[in-house]
Image 1 (tube, each protein chain N blue to C red):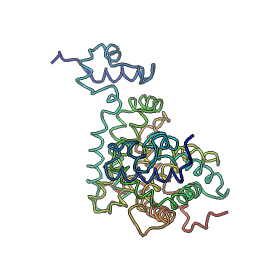
Image 2: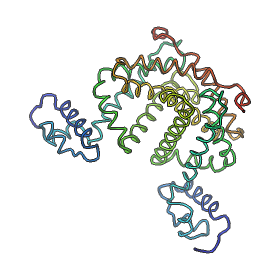
Image 3: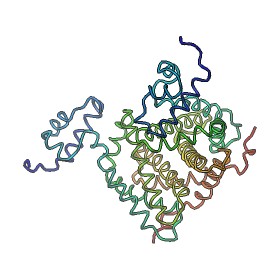
Image 4: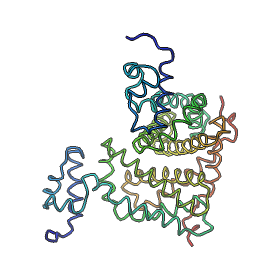
Amino acid sequence: MGRWQPNARGRLEQAALELYGERGFESTTVAEIAERAGLTERTFFRHFADKREVLFGGAGQLDELLATAVAAAPDRATPIQAVTAGLDAVAAVLNDRRDFACRRQPIITANAELRERELIKLAAWAVVLADALHERGIDTSTATLVAEIGIAVFRIAFQRWVDDPTAADLRDLIRASLDELKALAADVPGDPGDIRP
Amino acid sequence: MGRWQPNARGRLEQAALELYGERGFESTTVAEIAERAGLTERTFFRHFADKREVLFGGAGQLDELLATAVAAAPDRATPIQAVTAGLDAVAAVLNDRRDFACRRQPIITANAELRERELIKLAAWAVVLADALHERGIDTSTATLVAEIGIAVFRIAFQRWVDDPTAADLRDLIRASLDELKALAADVPGDPGDIRP
């Protein structure tokens, strides 16, 4: 083991975000990230499996948070309320990483491979949510619908949070997107004929 | 150009679905598909760029259908109604390809690469939907939310349609999933405190 490096992980993250922003994700090497951070490649690989993991390293822990928070929602919570509890738990963690999230987002958006990885991450969250809802006794098909809706709401709220420097608490934006969903869904036509010209 | 082969495309599709189902997508070669169809590899490549395109070949045309149907929705249609018009147009095409869709789905589900490709296809549909809604004068953020919700509803309805041999018309399942969404969304808590234990 090498000697202890104060906040090596944080320094590597900062260096990686800077370089991905300046040169693009594709064109940045691990050697360059380590150099910018004043650390060795060996230290980089003690913290991250590869340069992509700098951007996706926390996703697994958030999976668990989601599942735990849905399970812990009160018995009387409806499916959408249980999902909201899960998303709120994730949002509380992301609130503390706002600067990282805001700098990360344009890097993801600029790269097709990273956009795909982000889609896959969110699809995995939807599965975690659906399983957690099913554990609460909700049938699989409804659980999947609510989970997918919840993730759609989360994506929008997250994008709005990243885009709006005055929006401090991601949970407020999740709530606002849910309220918007409620208003939009109220327009669902009961009969296809309702919208025929 | 080779000689004309009656329904070569359909025969190649059938052969590919059979082989993907029997051996898995990964283990099937283009040569085997052509042989099973009684055609040459050259004929295969006149119809499909690769063996994955047999499963995703129609996605681009459906993109256009979606956009056109959203644009053609009556002026008074609300955002969710315009999305419903788009999804209905896609569903009408898929209704005529029910056998293909039902045989295709377990092949997609069984293979991680194909699942990812399916996610990317649906994400592209969401972008098409959001753009078409924005053209109708809906602000980008709301358009994106409605589009994502629409695609989530479509995924669920499609899975239910594939799973239920008695469900003939995909549009009915889209309508049922939208009604379910409406009922679920009505539970959105106005205040986070509503669901705190």
